[in-house]
Image (tube, rainbow, N blue to C red; front, side, top):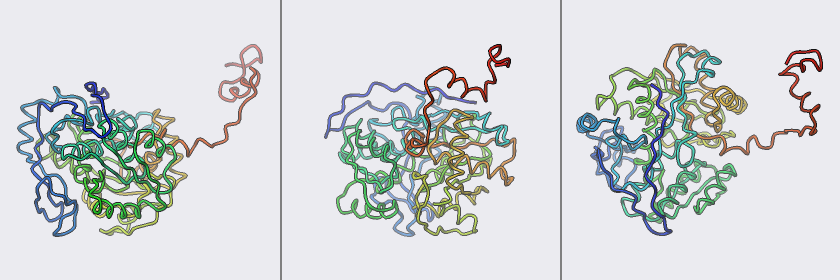
Length: 449
């Protein structure tokens, strides 16, 4: 099944700086979240705990659900009657008291990639196209929307993030709509367009002379000093749950069948780990059976701590210094990197890399075959997909989903400076330019068009 329609949200209320804006009370199914749990030792914590890592073993905390209650709720309130947004899976998301943001986020198209599939030798390839997500044209809208909603529900009027670009854009957009004061911290080499958009959306945007991993460490200290909530630091368990909705949608759009393979880009490793969490939650609610999905990761060769570890047979990442133009995935010490290794190897999947030239070529291949213009992270996904096929890890008839997570228009500065010489403005000059592909003009030059 291929579902590409999108729900139409209710009209937003007016937003005023410094005030929290009420949108609409939630009706229908409720969250079945029961608390936070450690994904390693299983320790349980209250949903409102301030910790993001387990005090016992330092592993990541994640939201836990009563899956039996979720199963009953899905049966009593059919999905067919719900809006086509990520909020349709309310039972498997953190609670929202009054829905203020994310009303029209998610349920992006799952596109049968026939032309790209023919190029690569796959007959059942699908693209999960988050280049058209709302409000900021990337998959980060999912996680940021959930985190901002939690911040609103717990009384915050200011919110921050550390970002390689897409998280900041999403936060600035959601904060503008909700009347929150946003602070976006980004490393020195962020794409110019992303920084400009954050400022245009009203966020205080701070460029810092350092790499992402250095900045992330400094912002952790700042969050503790100021009590300032960061969507991808202090609110990380909630932020991460939003990423899960990409896979929930994929499975529903495939007719409640899990794909044989799913391939996603890896930066901080939130998305790839939530692919596994989504599949586990769906099995626990009975929405899918126990069929296995191999989960694969794509990284840039210049920033590949997870892929390097998988190839070396290691269970622990070795941090690297990012050296790639694919800045949205240029994270050398991903916080959930060790968990990502376990996710990939535990599913029977693999991780691969692509260099910058391969990434750029794959961006153009995806655009030319499917009309989807992706940021470099999407190029990494397509380039790695080709390698996995060549290695025999994906068979021609396997149902395969590749996640394209960000829009290339946000990274246009990588291609905008290419030399595009202007032609002389007369018909003969234009005709000569087209002749190699159209042939000679019939009659005038004795050829055929």
